[in-house]
Image 1: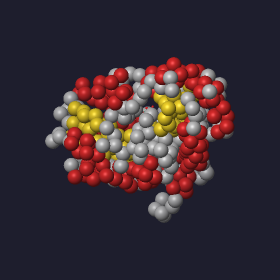
Image 2 (image 1 turned 90 degrees about the horizontal axis):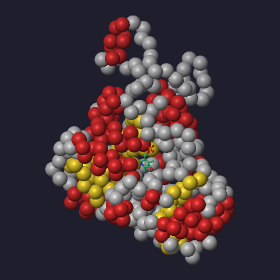
Image 3 (image 1 turned 90 degrees about the vertical axis):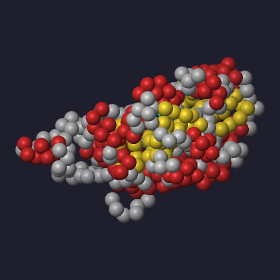
Length: 390
Ligand SMILES: *Cc1c(COP(=O)(O)O)cnc(C)c1O
């Protein structure tokens, strides 16, 4: 679609290539391979002399539809879908880096992403330096002659810290390195990092893009020049590919993304305000609260604070577990972005495998609880949290 359509239109109308049957909804192509008219065509396809489908590890019409739709929504030229958010991060790193390269990484990223840099990529000779997310000067000073990229999430999980993407992209551009932003928490509905100067956007589509807790998926979005070289080659060869079925679920998820993310974000802000007034709550972390230290930045680069609220209860882990265990409605699970409200104790679950020191640096105290607000009645959510809080 070349018209300058609005985001909600693109979410529903882009990426559609109808078959000869003129189906209205997006078709689901459950096929591992494709047939060729003759040997010559097969040879041409394999040698990239003729565009077309070959094998679903790297080409599938349903996966392509999802990729196209997400790319236009993020304001990117193209997207590469992967089996999960983690495989999107892995594929990006394997596509862009080699032994001896160095990356600068925000110290406030998803727990498994920390492990990927410190336990896996490091074994293959990729050096890393962790820096505080919001400290632009810290990023600048961490650059070495072999630095290839910056990697971050904003807002961060679970502490809701932000970085000024535009300001950081000036630093990365000057140093001729890639700025990679995991946009899982915001989705293109709340924030479009590519338009703020980032080179690559990463998604765990498992979260808001599915939004209903059904499938795993991931994506990498950016320009053709950045994506279609090493990153696409890695996917094609190594195969951390998204299944057609999961792509179809995610494609339909994009259609309702704006409605869900906006409604969940509004409820989250209301919940954050309510928690701020609660006597047993020490602090509340949500970018939409005027008490948030980066409230002005959040207003500048996001259209809303998002649907995740983290809060620290007075009484450490014991009280936090009591609040969690007293819920009857809210789901105790590490997942987030679901229509069902979920509750997590990051210090002992999602961030339990990183060292106590790293947790402290990232601001994840033992009393911290993360709630991902869903679409249930806000009154019911408040009542459920009150059981253990009061
Ligand atoms: C969940 C998550 C990931 C990993 O995604 P999976 O789909 O679970 O592999 C990466 N980044 C963030 C911010 C996440 O929340």
